[in-house]
Amino acid sequence: MHQAGAFEPHVIFGLSPLWVSTIVLIAVYGVIMSDRLNRAIVALLGAGLLIVIGPLDQIEAIKGVDFNTIALLTGMMILVGITRQCGVFQAVAIWSVRQARAEPWGILLMLQITTAVVSALLDNVTTVLLIVPVTLAITRELEVPPYPFLFAEVFASNIGGTATLIGDPPNILIGSMVGLTFNDFVIHLTPVIIVVMAAQAVMIHFMWGRSMRTTPEHQARVLAMKESDAITDWTLLKQSSAVVAIVILAFVFAKPLHLEPGSIAMLGAAVLMMLENYTHHAEKQTENVVRTFNEVEWVTIFFFVGLFMVVHGVEVAGLLNWLADLLLKATGGDLKITTLSILWASAVLSAIIDNIPFVATMIPLIKAMAPAFGGEQGLMPLWWALSLGACLGGNGTLVGASANLTVAGLAERAGVRFSFLEYTKTAFPLMLVSVAISHAYVWWRYL
Image (cartoon, rainbow, N blue to C red; front, side):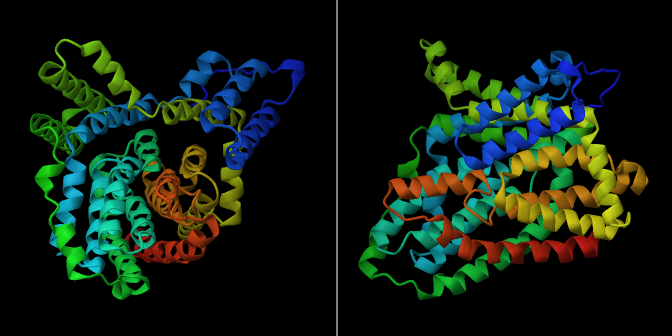
């Protein structure tokens, strides 16, 4: 978040900017949790109220919006939206199944690995949107229960997404607003995520995988599926593969190139749109560009815009500095206790509330602790604790992360029951195991 600068709030009726901004923040959180109104509407209403009542004016509210985050999200959504049209993700899923020789336990493992890797390179919601329909088709052919596969993919998407800057929205927020690079996330988080993913796969194997059985006839039907049949456009496959590879390389070398992730993603999106329109839609470019922009999750983008403003309101009013001081007093200013408290609190709270608004609120709060820990460099363990807690904690319940609700919705449309209680009974203990592994890693590496 940006510093308040010389802004002086002028609140109607002489009300306290601190109390007004705090009440609006709590109200926004409460309505988002109730799920009675779309979260983008809630966040924008909250931002509008702050501007009208006076804790912010329009100029100060816009200062709170991190446009690097907005550009990174939008650019990646366009890249993925175009790439998915060629069928490459379905082909990768079919390849995974064939590698497992259509053995149910092997498919369960391979689909988890595939989901985790794709989620790390793209984003977890898009990944499950592409993998789940293929999974449902495969489980139908094998006549095995689809629920364990879908459950495992939820976990794998959130775990894999934790490994990189672009895999999960909380990481995009932390990376952009703190100035951490793609390489920083890979170096600091990928090692523990590999361990967490391995532990998760073993636990899921013992819960479901080893007891699954099918017949040779069913296996033969699945093995008859061919990766090449899933590819619908070979030219687009080559174009999108090249552009996505260059974008990821640019993320890796962003620092020496003096480029921000948002610029890289937007330029990559523009290049792929140009190539796709030049090759496929020379006569109908406007229609196709409109269709491509419709692939962007504008609900998420405008949710971020409103949320940035609401959180900036409480930052300007001084609430986050006050909370930071309170947290430091509670932990005695001890870096170890503060870091591990943030890890566990982030995990548990992210299972209950959406991890995006939680992380957006925590970032400026943690920044306010810099003087107590010797400057910004002293905050590094806290950033990794926040990322691991928020991203992995999202696995704890169905409402913890967007990917969870996406899978549940797709499953229910296909007639597969995905209840909140049934999911939480299994998921919450497994989530705690992944956070315990992260606890050991953070303690060993940073504390």
